[in-house]
Image (cartoon, rainbow, N blue to C red; front, side, top):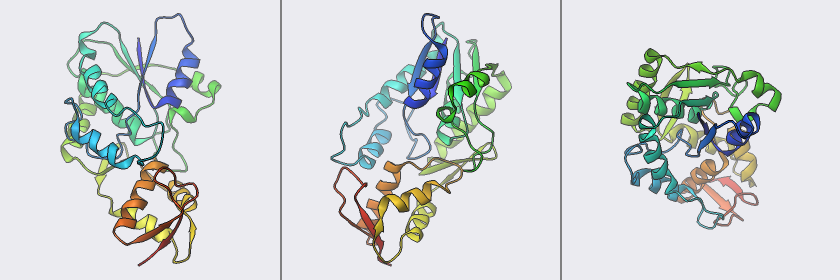
Length: 256
C-alpha cells in the first residue's frame, strides 16, 4: 500500500501510526499546491512551477530545497496506475491536501488500482474549524484511520476539479464549500497591507495576524514573506532589518 501525504509533518505522523514491517510505504508530496501557477505541473520538467518556487524562496535561506523534486513527483504520480500497490491518500481541510487528493484522482481515473482515502478533516476550511493531518495527536489520528474506497464517481468528480483548477492557473486557490476558488494576489496583499500601520512593527506579527484569519488555505510564513518583499519592491511597504534569508528580525511599515 502506498500512503500519500502532504508535507513531512503529516508523513511523520502517518509513519508512526503505521509502524514498520507491514509492507506499507509512505510517499510525501511537499509542494504547496494552494499557491502559485499550476501550468505544466503534471508534465516534467515542470518549469513554470519550479520557477515560481525559486522566486518565492529567500535567496540566502538554507538548506535550500531541491525543487527538481517537483518533476520527480510528477513522474512518480504518472506511474501510479502501472504499478501493483493500492493507493491511500491522507487528507484534511487544507487546500493543499485537497488538491493533492484531486491530483491523485486525476491520475487514477479509469484505473483498476484500489484507491482509498483517510479523511482527517472537518469538511470546513475556515480557521476556527479546519484540521490538517499533521494537526492531530497520535491517538486522534489512530481513531481517524478508517480507509474508505474512493468510488469511480467521486474519482471522476475530483479529477474534473483538478483539471479545471490547473486550467484556471490562478495565483492562489482556496478550498471553500468543498470546491476550489482561484484568485490573484490582490486580496492577500490588501490584507497584509491593511495589517501594517505607518509606524514600524514586527513583520512576523503582521504575518501571524494574516495566518490567524486566512480561511480557505494555509498562508505559510515563506509565502507571506515573499508577498511582503513584492509589496516592498512596489513601494507599498517598507522593510527594515530583514536579511535575504529571514523575516524573524524584520520590521515593516506601510508607505501608502
